[in-house]
Amino acid sequence: MSRLAMIAETAAEQTPRGQTVVVLAPSAQDAHVCERVLRDAQLPAVFSATLDDFCSCIGDESGVALIAEEHLNTDALNRLTDTLDNQPTWSDFPLIVLLAGGEHSTLRIEQLLSMGNVTLIQRPLRIAIFVNTLRARLRDRGRQFAVRDIVREQALARQQSAADARRFDMALKAGDMGAWEQNGKQVYWSQKMYDLFGYSSDMPASVDAVYDRVHEDDRDELMQRWKDATSRAEAFQHKFRIRHPSRSVRWVETVGEPVRSRTGTSVCYAGLTWDITEEREANEKIEHARRQAELLDLAKSEFLANMSH
Image 1 (spheres, rainbow, N blue to C red):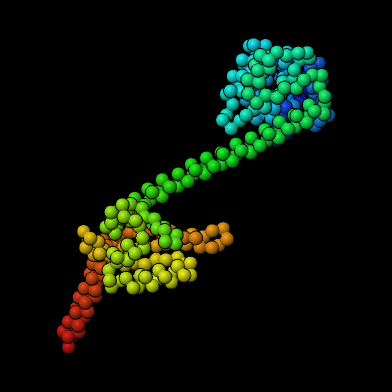
Image 2 (image 1 turned 60 degrees about the vertical axis):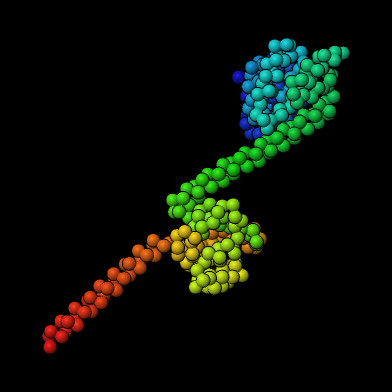
């Protein structure tokens, strides 16, 4: 590797992505002239001696490519067009072609412009215009990378959100839980919520629909505790009975948390509800057995006390 190529490669490695000029310079003289102009303009560059290397550099995170028209015969033009066509969807890679002196046919200009995002610069060069054009294309390229990063972040966020949603859905199914959300008068229920309260899924979800199913002996307490929690934007948890249309009286437990905006304002409530009837019945049986055991122990103690007298 030549000293010039090593300097150019080192500079490119230290340059932000999308800000390197890729130059096709088959001869040492071409490289020397371009390097001097770009160095004076403080524009980092990578010099390629062959078209293959040039196209390979375009495939990396380069900023703009620079090529003289005389290097673009039919084969080179087709090869470069294929390279530019195979760029990622977010990339509109800028190519600058230095036109040879003299007149150019309309067909030739159309051929060059057909490669994509092409800027034609007439020679002999006016250095100030040439450098300003390079910088403008590099700024465009920098914006492309910024857009690419945003698109990638959004894609990752969507993937993460979808993964979280799948895990949450699996957890809900495993726990046999219904999910709900209330934002003002707008209410969302998962399908399990409709099943828990015995409603058809085509019925609009609402708080009133919950209260209509709540056991009349538990309704006032539930309404008051919900009012207290929401007025203070506090977490909510309560156990109560409902009258299911086909499963008679059921016990359910519900929990909810206020979802806040960045300013701290409570935006809505989100929570879970699940059936605890079997759990409650099991606990009641355990409690009944415990009381029966205590009564039996008490009866034994009284019997022994009486026998001792």
